[in-house]
Amino acid sequence: MARARPRGDPGTPGAAESEKRGSLVDDAYAAMRSAIREASFAPGYQASEQEIALRLGMSRTPVHEAAIRLQEDGLVRVLPRKGILILALAPDDMREIYDVVIAMDGRAAELVAALPDDERLAAAQALDAHTEAMAAAHASGDLPGWGLADAAFHAALIAQARNGRMSRIVQAINDQSHRARMLTLTLRPRLDASIAEHRRIAQAIRAGTADAALDAARQHRMRARDELLPLLDRCGLKHL
Amino acid sequence: MARARPRGDPGTPGAAESEKRGSLVDDAYAAMRSAIREASFAPGYQASEQEIALRLGMSRTPVHEAAIRLQEDGLVRVLPRKGILILALAPDDMREIYDVVIAMDGRAAELVAALPDDERLAAAQALDAHTEAMAAAHASGDLPGWGLADAAFHAALIAQARNGRMSRIVQAINDQSHRARMLTLTLRPRLDASIAEHRRIAQAIRAGTADAALDAARQHRMRARDELLPLLDRCGLKHL
DNA sequence: GTATCCAAGCTTGCATGGAAGATGGCGCGC
DNA sequence: GCGCGCCATCTTCCATGCAAGCTTGGATAC
Image (cartoon, rainbow over all chains, first blue to last red; front, side, top):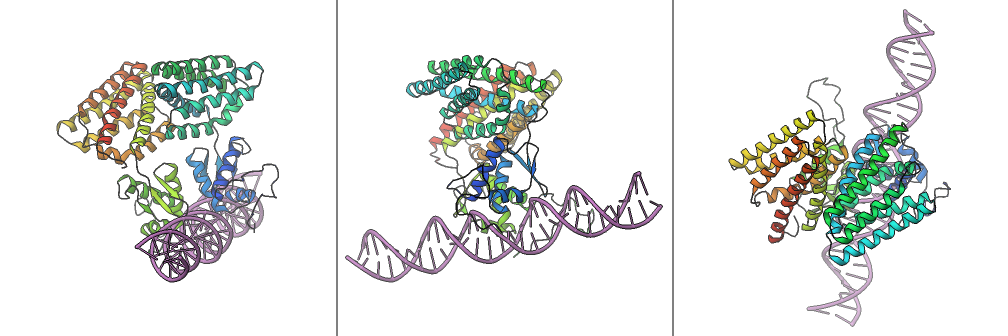
């Protein structure tokens, strides 16, 4: 059957994927993860490993192993003898996710604010740069740009905390909520509130007041949650 | 070698209590996880999948897939074409781990304190019961009992927060630090301080003061960290 | 028309073989 | 003695075969 593909995959145009140096398992993991993030695999869709393997031009084994990793990440569920189920997010999942990021972002901000002066100031400067990018995107009505800059701000905050475990956890959580974030980006009012709150977080970090940074980050995430969850409920989005 | 027994056992209906519902992968995962927790697989040990498969009486495939899950949990590292490395914990890992539990326990306590009256009081009562068990163990010099009750307290705190993602994260973190906890159990002074702090957490939850609960839980974990990390450094434990 | 049962076709779980990469030891040149 | 390259061996990676479980659709009995 499918003879090993030495290079690109001529059978599947469009989703040109994976010129990764990694193993086939890594390729399959990256491709599936990306497909789920970008919703080319719709939530609720039940795929067969065989079919995915065919599409990716490999055998079932690497797809199966990638599915295990994705299941561990909370993105899919492998149903024994039935296939791979792309998980959907219910409003309750968003509540869970927000609790985790409230805790994580808060602790990260606290940690960054407790860094030595030079690192702390550099971090605050980097954060401010992201915030300015958000403001610019907001001014020009560039919604996707706003979302990217917002994500960059929070990614930088976590990264500056220098905690690999926290980074991994937040990364996994972000993967899970990425689709919801994209969907709700167009629905949210008050993008300017986020910008002001980001400035407060960066300011507290610059000042080195750890408890103020903790509080600012927590308040920011909590307000975003209180803004978003009712939106989801009102739209009757049972799963997304 | 052990012939793999055919699954199910149609000849004996209902007799033997509960053949494990799990697949071989689950068996392998449970066995390896337990072996790592209990340090029968020493950290730093490099095992071959073949060897583990032989020991567990199965083929390489389920062992390999279990290893992927364990790697995702942060317990091992599978080195391509070299084998499975049992991960060791450096003091810096303990710092990371404490940051995560500080964030998680704090948020969990806050959430539980914000529960409706009846659930909140029931939770506080359950927590107090665990604390009393700790006190009793402490009084009778039962160190392992103290450790178990302490673990039960924190597990209950997280469970009461009703957040599956938080539970999973804390569970994974606990698996990683289990060995260190067992080791340091005998070294820690001031077990009574933990008991008093647990009482403060439960009291704040009973009172329904979320911010006090958050603070109490954070302070508790931070003090424990400040007590433990110097101990590890002083003992020169580079990895454990 | 409706309910029931059985078989066929789908799916994955697991074992195994071939191939390729990594490693350590051994011999060779100096 | 010392360094270097080569090969034997050990390891995983991936493809594939077989069997078992689940679902479904059709045939049959009433």
